[in-house]
Picture 1 (cartoon, each protein chain N blue to C red):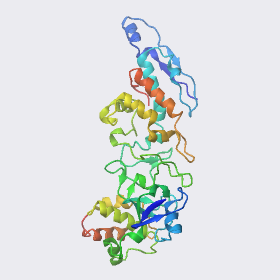
Picture 2 (tube, helix red, strand yellow; picture 1 turned 180 degrees about the vertical axis):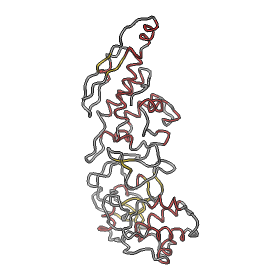
Picture 3 (spheres, rainbow over the protein chains, first blue to last red; picture 1 turned 90 degrees about the vertical axis):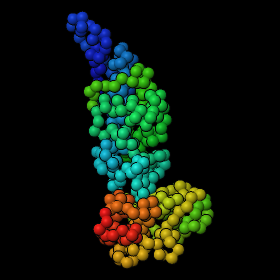
Picture 4 (cartoon, chains in turn brown, green; picture 1 turned 60 degrees about the vertical axis):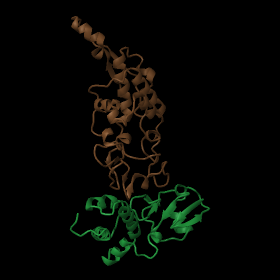
Length: 213
Length: 153
């Protein structure tokens, strides 16, 4: 169980004003509900964070528990080849992203990956199986860097924040993270919760955490 | 379901989730395509689906419905595809088990990229394993079929 404390006053404008005024008011930590590694907190769990920006950052920190899971990062590599398994091993057989992030002739992603998981062969699958473009690489990046990247249309597939919310709520390849098939560990929570967190993050100004890893 | 195999329209009465390899080998009797690992890890079962290489051992036959499948038997009408000729000239196979898959991947490569570099050959052929280790001859034969000199990389 993880207990995360969000130091609201450290990031709130009110606190900055107070400090400038010479007040020695201590930061007020907000203790979030403890959840297991396979659960996501609900949007309501963040209501106790009064400051809007701090709440937004905390919401993204929660989203990052999905985004930084190997199940997602494996296909958001910083190089030309994906990874696999929780240890982020190199993809076997060796494949490269190719000109359109769908492999190269003879070794296209869809040469093996079908539109759904394969029960007997354990080959994972979902519609439009492919690598995230290199501009959307998450491997090795901090949560803050991924957050800034997600908001940048040049690095998020040209999406507005509203389109980003729809993507997290509905995209079938994103959905695979919660239904990876075989004995693979899914990402925490469910897609509806992740979409709701993303919507709440956007609604609170889509603020990025500064130093959460 | 209907699909085209090596240019011939076929109607199959099979479970849509049957692996395409089973339909090719057991239902249609085209045994040139081999079963290797059954998990898309060795490439022995490679065929073309509308010109794209797929591992038929993990491809449900439903995916081929209404499409065109080419197996090693359909690579050329007279076994004189430039790759087949180069394969014979350079005596590429040893045991031969993987070679149908090797030829299907190599032929898709040359169809898309008639003058591949060594690196492009390696990237496209990386999913076709050969336990006899004929990789050097495979690459030389692909280059010969492409009209490339051995020293061209």
